[in-house]
Length: 167
Image (cartoon, rainbow, N blue to C red; front, side, top):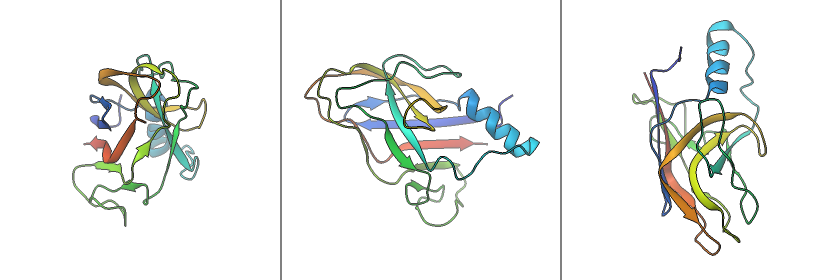
């Protein structure tokens, strides 16, 4: 049973990607349900950041795809903070008070420039570690994008990575 009716993850990766709706991965669903209803510990201060990653194969509810590796690629850290994420009320100050359950990134999220071919990127995810870690959200892109040596560094514009938990 899912705690949320739906999670809309609308993301446009500037000049590179577009994605479709996604749901929380099994790991985060279980942690959320246990923390909210079963009073089990889930640290609200760790990790200090989440990490955005790109994949060359599709994600599932239980696992991420094959991550891009080497050649100028690294996961991008996004702090778990009010400064990094706009609240549901549209700004990055104060507690969320909006009515649509939507947050978005407050600043550009830019990957490194590819110094070799990365292949056909088909999905992206948010994980809780710089390497390995647990997938929190992962979704396929609407259209895959081949990234080659010399292409512009892919990035999410400020406000483009939008996460909506709708009840």
